[in-house]
Amino acid sequence: MKRYFYLFISIFICALSAGAQGFPEDGGIYRIINTVRDNSVLVENYMTHQLKGGTKVEGEAAQMWLLKQNGEGWNIQNIFTGRYIKKETSNSKLYVTDTDDSEIGLFYVSKNKHYTEECYNILNDKGGNYGIHCETDGDIVPWYSSTSKFDGTEWTYEKIDFSAEDIAAVRENYNKFNQLLTDKDQIMEKYSSF
Image (cartoon, rainbow, N blue to C red; front, top):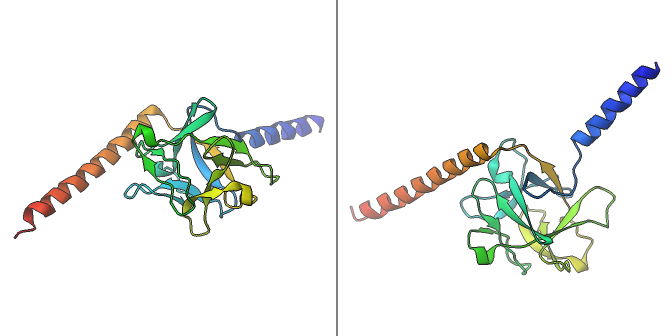
């Protein structure tokens, strides 16, 4: 009986640690999940490059993010497009991604102090004035953090096993998709006079 008890406890501890969400690791690939908005997943619309909160889709690379530590902050890169989240400081603007190095946001991740659940805020600056926030309609906007308890601004990180070969394959598909759009535009322009 005692042996079964220890076996049960060991299995329970392994199960807890396997599903644990915690502070991100440098170079880790994550699905970033909002804990308030029906577990909306942070996703980049690869046509408009705007960020949205969406439904989790297994294997969807537009929902996967590479977190790279940069000093005390983090750069957040989309796996599918290779673009980085751009910093925004106006509540009226949506977060977007960009490839311009001067526009790449440096974000600070801090443990959320208002809730008991293991969740984090993704802040625009070290002082924590604006955070990445998921609106009820799924729009991802800056939220002035000192005026609220961060409702919609609580995130967890689900680590994803995705190899360098997997990244290369999805980026190749993205590049092919962009080439098709370019070809379509050129064809439409060429034959618009007919």
